[in-house]
Length: 83
Image 1: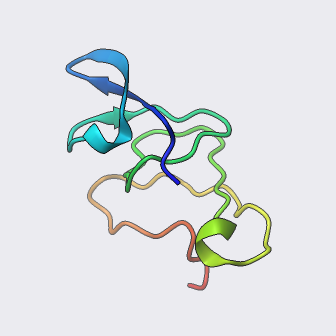
Image 2 (image 1 turned 90 degrees about the vertical axis):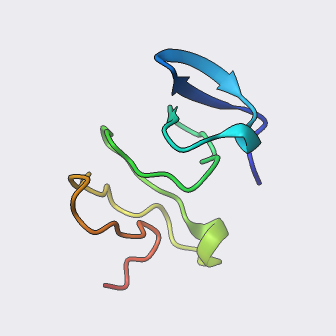
């Protein structure tokens, strides 16, 4: 389910790379309709919504927007809204 390419900012330059070559420190740029190429930490977002049915097997629509948390807080799985 990986996309064919991922747009990243690496060494200060925006480039398209094979998702298998992503490394810690890459900033992945996502736009509407993109597949997420790896486990990511969201550092900035505007109106982010997630569709997790392919992961959860559920038929629910997208989850409501999730606020971006400061990096020092505990991460939360945005596809798990049971809490």
